[in-house]
Length: 192
Image (cartoon, rainbow, N blue to C red):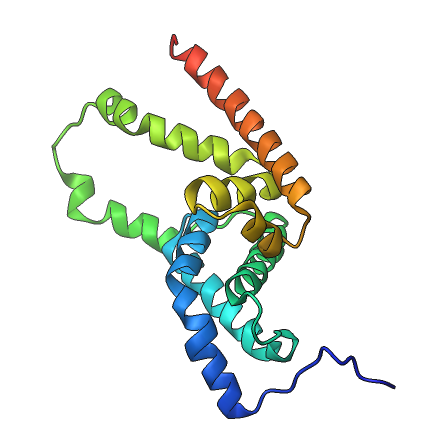
């Protein structure tokens, strides 16, 4: 069987050099993207770790001199989607020890009363935007995060998502319209 000429074989030294020089400079941007996708620090860290493990495992498919950032973001995005699909099929889990710990703590026994209306209104706008964004399909949420939050160009997004630029533009336009619709009904319900 003939081997594809695009396959490269990295020595151990070349793998380390690729990680140090090509991959690690993007770890902060990757974490920001992972956190915006997962909304959880631990899940974002797990996603980054999974991305780096996969990038090490499949490093021979990375072509030297190409856009390492786009290659890593594509792995991260695919890992997130795979985890998202797997988790969406699992039943919801509750950590009963955490609930029990709260009710046995001093916080639960304090006599401090709070005006829940103030707390709710104070955080509502941020929560409503997050909820609207989270309610979008993964493909739409991803383009909004990559473009409007992370500031990637259409070209970078096309490489990360492995889709044509025209599809990026179309998906982003549709995602923004869906988000606008979701937030418009919220704004109307608030009297705007």
